[in-house]
Length: 74
Ligand SMILES: [Zn+2]
Ligand SMILES: [Zn+2]
Image 1 (cartoon, helix red, strand yellow):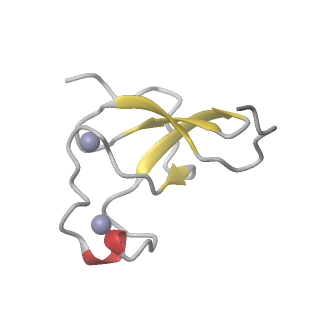
Image 2: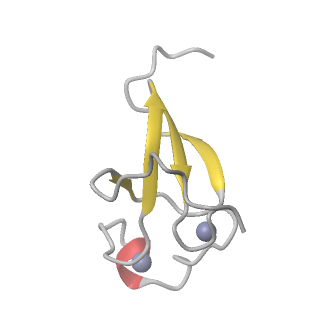
């Protein structure tokens, strides 16, 4: 398992489903799109709409396009 990134900050969190462990699958608040107290991810950095995330459960690192603030490239 990867270590948690040293730049990870619990004050910067994002509620995005983890593509690896998918631990939010059976969670009511997550499925309702609410800010679950258990299934959040570290928001390491972002570049425009592209968020760099790390899952505190399985330490998976990935990028996710939030679609917000995009310059709308095709
Ligand atoms: Zn995970
Ligand atoms: Zn949850």
